[in-house]
Image: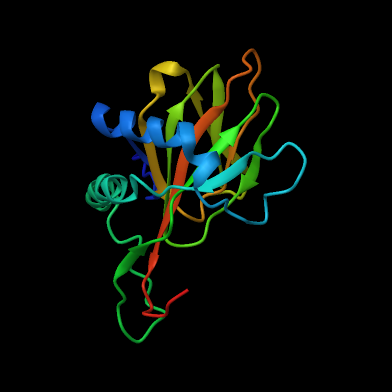
Length: 192
């Protein structure tokens, strides 16, 4: 008898360099005053964090994300090989955004646009949970929980954009939990 596991895509996590983390923290401290606010389907709902675009450190952060993207493709090749177009398209990054989550706020289970997504944890004032939801081989929902503490500050999690995920509320601190998220999409050549 043999046991065969069916292939599937997963996620990778990686720690960003301290210098980049420190630069991102500095921008996050002032972004609410000077960066454009992001509008999306989750904004303006009770208990949903506010989002602002990353501006000052975007280039350095995108270079780091690009290195993680390469590593992901080494671990889980061919996710972007969607043969629904007449020609292959190059990838591009959308504008990353900063999430400011207060005690009691949450990001409900949702998916992102694009092929790949990521979230990086900049400040974690209290223990909290990030969770993936997926359908297993027999059609039941399954969950993968990532417990986060202040030791996880600087961690970036990279995953398929259509993998549902949620950021649960935290308690025990009046400080904000800060994360930066974004997506990698196909570049069709059309300007937004």
